[in-house]
Length: 609
Ligand code: ADP
Image (cartoon, rainbow, N blue to C red; front, top):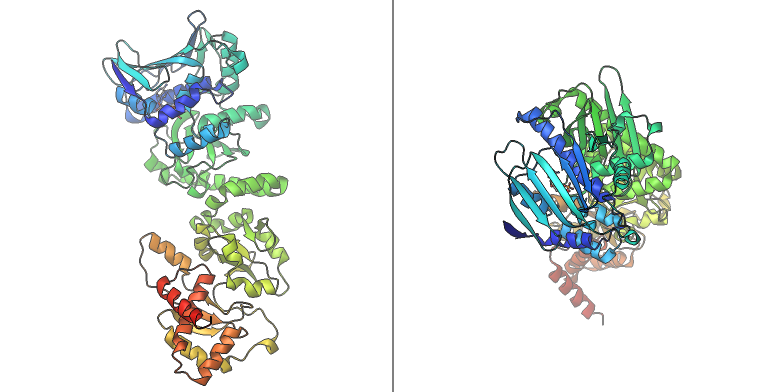
């Protein structure tokens, strides 16, 4: 026999379980049954797809209780675990972000939502038991099995188990009943029946107690919506998602005819902590005629809708379909298109039917959904229709349709500005004339915004237009404009001095208070995008931008006068550099040589004090 220590994070989680920070302790049984059901699915698949020799004629879950001995046992004849797997799967928590979540949990104390993010699973047994014994043997292995035991403190023991049958048996040594602490008598037959019925009715294998089968085993997705309670849907959602909060939306689909399938999808109410991690689990569960085929089936749902959970049960696929085949299967591609359409239209309906729900949805998942604008050109329209964006028109996000409705007379384009934060965008010099003339501008601050705006040509016939790109001419009144000609010598001089940094120097129609700003040519890559490419390791040529000057600004006027007095004035090149640097800083850009800029500025200030 060997005594081993739990991994540090596992120990912390166990601590939390032993001290029961979660008020509903009944769910431990759901977790055990959920694991058992997964193990049965895995065994059936291993036989089906890998040709493992195994008896799958009577796959089931069995519950035994002994009121005298105060034990409760859950047994399955599923795939089982090897000794190494027991150590790896039960002794550690492999999930990414666990440490971070644990810290939050300890701060938050009574917070089921946070615990929900772990899917605490097996460890939840320590809420109700002071000792847990697990005996298991992996299908397809010869000889002895493995016996694991722990009291939920720092260590567990592991040993060989002679004569262990294939599958897993978990025995809980129950803590004394304490109803004040919501700790019920889990050896009680009625309590067990009640919990199974409530949480695990849909499990597709029989859950037996003695001669009785406790669950109906009906696939939830095959039952008409009117016959299923929200509570049943929610329990099923927990089983497949490991998220303990209720979903925001439930979607049923059924297609008959040449290619039959049923789908039950859930839109969660909260983004998982690993939504933007590459290795996160994503995708739907695939069933064929009620038989579980695979988890995390990415082929069924595009990446930008990766937060959608659920089941697709297709009638006409082969039971031993592989992931490789799935990728090319025409039917799967068709299902995927339909699911996408349905999810997008459900959200669109939500916008009018329940704006608050929609706001939650967009806050949690909008960033992911916008990736779809890059991935699926065909779906630009439906995706843009469900999108909302921060705007200079108030603090609430707006849809594009609402924006278009508010557009000023004569305005042909949808204006936006990208940046790192709302305040940076709002205070950008590019915004000045638009604010002064009362044009609404969308404020786009997610990294993905920098990219999709180039991929999306228009919405509702209106072009999307960055106010930091190309020429802008909002003023109808020609009278007010300063003739460019007067400034030509200065502009030429500046162009020469700043040749390394800018490709053109011109007068601006977008500034009211700032002296200068930088703009990108309409077709050029923006600096933010350039920066992102560099961060991804792609080197490209530096794209020069255009320096625009505000002819009404005293600095620009003064500069013109100074240049007219004498182009050889030694202070002029420094002023040119200062002007360029200030424009860069004002939009939140990075100076190439901040030390040099600081010195120029200090020298110049010294002359005025
Ligand atoms: P989760 O189910 O969320 O992955 P658990 O802590 O409940 O987390 O279980 C950890 C892992 O241990 C499971 O993913 C599974 O691989 C394995 N396991 C648990 N129970 C069983 C079982 N009855 N049969 C086979 N493997 C199991």
